[in-house]
Image 1 (cartoon, rainbow, N blue to C red):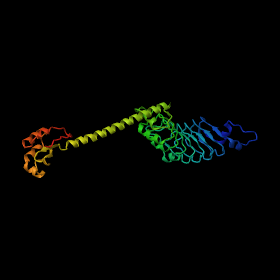
Image 2 (image 1 turned 90 degrees about the vertical axis):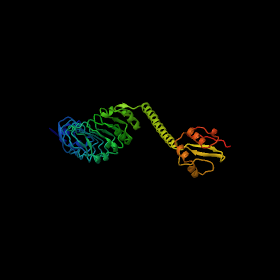
Image 3 (image 1 turned 120 degrees about the vertical axis):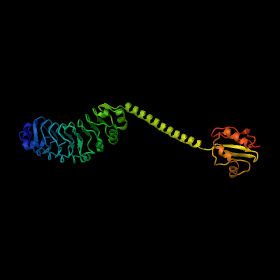
Length: 357
């Protein structure tokens, strides 16, 4: 195995020191170091590389992130395809913008507090035990809320990404080959990520859900690419018109249903009302009202009051509640109701007029 040392850097670097330069001076001016695929298993102290900004250490055997504390000008760090199981010792890299950690053994995204300038985080394809999934430390997510713009979490057995809604400036999310299942969860996420313009969820179970693409396009106005396919203005406008039409139909159906309920309620209440027919009585000389369905009301009869009418005509009151209008007319005729020729049957709700004599 090989350890990354200052001597190794000085010997293998593409930059050649000038004759008058010391090794220290040479190391200070190095900005890029590339030791990818060199069987590196450990990182020695690189504090003399004051201006180091880009470090390529991918495809090695590194198990721990160490001795980078003093590389304070580092902006790009490539550590993918190593043996790293824990993200650590990066807190002092305040200028770090891009961090590549794909293909390691990391189970939890953590230890990135303080990296307020980090714009890209790539943690795809972690080699996790069967059945385990990549997790996110809320403290790390909170620290990256305003800076992170690109996140790659592909192939990590992830089934829920709602926690990512805190990343308010995220504009690219790559989460291919995971276990995302619910369109509703994605809709909630897109409602929060107002700057997201590219999202790739290919080979997730959710992609097979009915109207999956349509629903996500409708919920996000910022999204321009979904699963590698561009969202054209015509497609979005068509879906918006379709949704508006569908919503209008729902509102209309709801209104009609409400009106129908009111109508049914009115009819039901009306059917319980009493049939009221004005009838002429010659003894009085003006119409009286006969309640055919309410035996507790009074039957107009001569000069008698409602109370006396009930006493004088108990049989009529008892029978009349169950009679039709035609039967009631016959009954009234038998009980000295003269000239009923102007009285006729009527439907519920119609008026019957009786001419005075």
